[in-house]
Image (cartoon, rainbow, N blue to C red):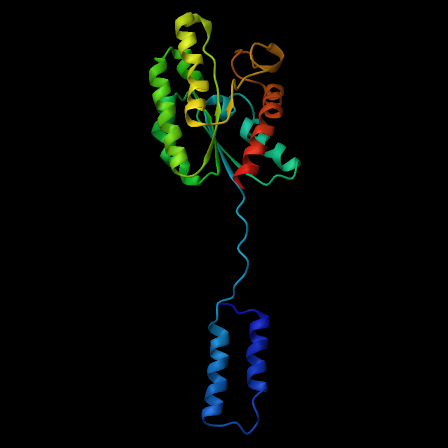
Length: 233
């Protein structure tokens, strides 16, 4: 184990301070003092842990169709750093993922020990017409798992497309505000607010934001994240 110069200086001082004629028990005592100085642990203030934000979602999170540095999690981290907010944002987005897929992989994702989880799943469930009751159940189970770790949850809402009918849309769209109310969670009502249905902010498929669209999403959502990180710390 490498010793610091200060530690060696203390050891040298212990020997030099002893009278030249010191023998027997005095010499042994001086020697033992030096040994204790060598073996004493060096204590230093523990470094503050940088808050971890787990951005848990689908292709909207993963950054489908755009460079990784331009994906929502990376741009969110940059936004925070530019404002002097220390945080590490983990991109836990999987393209095509549903709430069932998210529930299956959540335990593994939580090993990053996040302070805050941005829960952004449901878009693919809506596109596939998955039963809203199943979507709700999956999200509720994920919320429970996250809260059991002590992490905060920011729920990003999603809206169903109109092609499944008004009854489906009404049932699906109500999932997020009702879960937020039941679990006392902060809710951002619609992840794609300000970007959906705007061709200049989306890729040619009309579903995924382009780089300009991601910038709009970050500017809208990042202040909410900053406030939650401040509360968590």
